[in-house]
Amino acid sequence: MTVDAASGLPTLTKPADGVPDVTDNPHTWRVTLNELANGSGPIAIDVERAQGYRYLSKAYLLQLKRHGAGIHLVDPVALEGPGEAVADLTELQEIIGDQEWILHAATQDLPNLVELGLRPSKLFDTELAGRLLGLERVGLGSMVEAYCGVHLLKEHSAVDWSRRPMPEDWLAYAALDVELLHELRDHLLTELINTGKQRWAREEFDHLCRCALTERPARPDPWRKTSGCHQVRSRRGLALVKQLWTVRERIAERTDTAHGKILHDKAITELASMITRSHPEVPGVAALRRIDGFKRRRARANEQAWLEAMDEVADMPEADLPPMKRPSEGVPMPRNWERLRPEAHQRWEAVRPAIVTLAEELRLPVENLISPDSLRQVLWAPESTEDAGIATQLEGLDVRAWQRELVVPIILAGIS
Image (cartoon, rainbow, N blue to C red; front, side):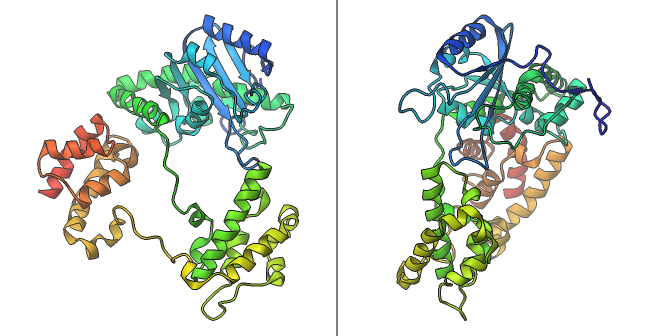
């Protein structure tokens, strides 16, 4: 075993029992199910995706570990049935559905697990536990070093997990993601108990389980999230961003390729920002070809699609162009409150600093004490000036009981 130069800790390069073979056919799937069923206690789970390579954010590898069953590496793609976009792993759900799942950064993996037919009834999120304990570094590698005394190799975190066959060193890396999760969970649980934060963690983990079963609403105008969109200063320029984004989306979906592999955001907004009041025309092919992002191989291969999008925007009536900003929905940002609603601004100025101070005293990130959106909503329009009324309003905003107990007195002091 080698020693990591930076930390001085021994480096773990593979699990203690070695790297298991990949479960990638019906026979080995039956073996995996039987071994997991005969194991005991919580199940450590991790998911590998191919972000940055594929359009679909699906699971390309599933790692599981249970005491008495060892580590299992499952290839969900190989287990897909005819016509299935993702594998149906509900047989595994029947075995582990009522057990505690141990995950690190559960919000990243739960959508993929639910897509595979796996739904948690209880879980333990080691990253979230670290945040509740006030740890400065909550990455898996950092936490394993701090609590387990070993260094994990993490050089394969951004590889193309859709590649088949997966190299052996990739599989070793993936297996290590669950090798020490049980031990880490036990250390964290002890510390949560000792600091009086166990109930906080349990309510947060139960909240994650509920959220996993709730479908997220589609984001309106997702093209406005294109990097550099704020530099586009005209409605026709925004129309060009939207049109190029939409065309890229179609190509990405059709070819199952990540957006950035087809055309970078920067290329889209650089072209669109050329449309200004003094130069209101859509740029031509020469301008497009001068932009580095359009010179890349996949962008050049789709040049005709970009040019057609540009022509559509050039012919678009003024009335059909998108507004510079989407109509405001929900509560404005607090920086505008003094002008829009002075009394809300006064509440914000009184309550927000006190919330920050309390979070520091409790060694919590302030967003884990109460979400910024929930705090904005209750201070913008409090529905009561009494304890029970504010608590009810916060409950409706999905603020957990332990959070309400801590923040309601501060909010009441600020609005009375």
